[in-house]
Image 1 (cartoon, rainbow, N blue to C red):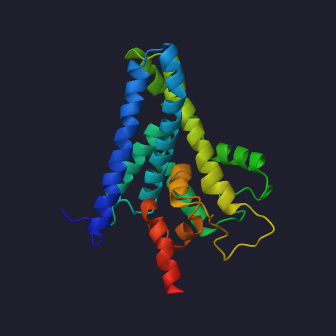
Image 2 (image 1 turned 45 degrees about the vertical axis):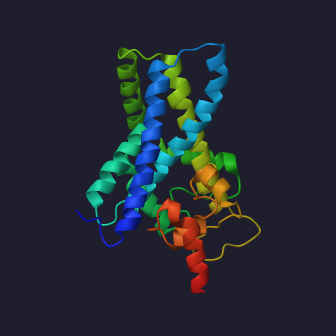
Length: 245
């Protein structure tokens, strides 16, 4: 069954997505259901939390690629299924609710019509973050998380493990996504934006770009220039765009 004209790219993206999802799921299940607290595991827990926060950011980025159809080009159903599963696992988010908001962001980035932008405070992080949080976190999400937590407790998990290894990584991932994927790329400052995309990239090296927000901070302008490019090809997209100039 063909994945479309860019079969090699699609297969590579799907393999990366599968690896991220599998790693997240392994830590999620292992830490929530099998973690036993001791002096040694207390010292190890911060490392697990940081890794899981990064993988949680990865789940959102996979879903983001699904919104642009770039995870599996020409397979809208597969994109929707994977995106729905990733957002639900990450933090009980609704793919159907986020999809139109994200496309509205691309239609009018950095303007009052952009749901990711805070026009009243285009330079201030905290008011912008509060607006960002209110816009994306809903009562429905809280219900879904609560139901999942109840099921986990019924299956033998502890509330402490649920909070430490699911809630805290999800909140840290939210911070990563906001700071590196929204605020820094679209923040207004004394340097004007290059074009109507109202987005800027940074000079982070690729490894740091990967660790901060799966390349969506350091290569954010490139993403707006080519939204159909999957996250892992953004560094190459920069070189390709520069070669065309």
